[in-house]
Amino acid sequence: MYTLDDLKEIMTKLRAEDGCPWDRVQTHESMKRYLVEETAEVLTAIDNKDPDNLCEELGDLLYQIMIHTEIEKENGTFTIDDVIDDICWKMVKRHPNVFGGPKLPEGLSSAERWAEIKRIERAERAVRNKERAKRRSE
Image 1 (cartoon, helix red, strand yellow):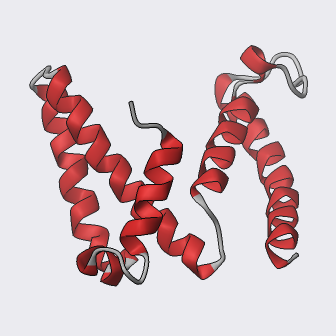
Image 2 (cartoon, one colour):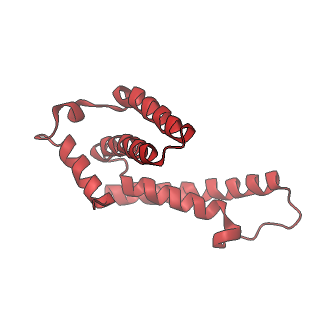
């Protein structure tokens, strides 16, 4: 069974000088329509309650994410590992009731709690982005 590491290697090879001519020339702009198409196909599979097709279409959508991140990896800005790190970090931060984290003042409404979590997250994200930029320059 293939893994995420295999997918990362496949994407790098597809975009390499001796890789697939079609994949090599793609840009964020040229891939936008495919991102929309694949998202629509995921939604159709959900509407059709077709888990086999959903699995396939989610893979196609993941390919879209992979090629966009591979382009940014080539530009030296971020990698799929950064994307994964960001979403994990965000989910942990946004669910302090599940993962622990800063205690929010009692008596806040749901909207106020969410706004406070987002405020804390923005401040911490600025620090994380500076740290990521420093690691890239080293």
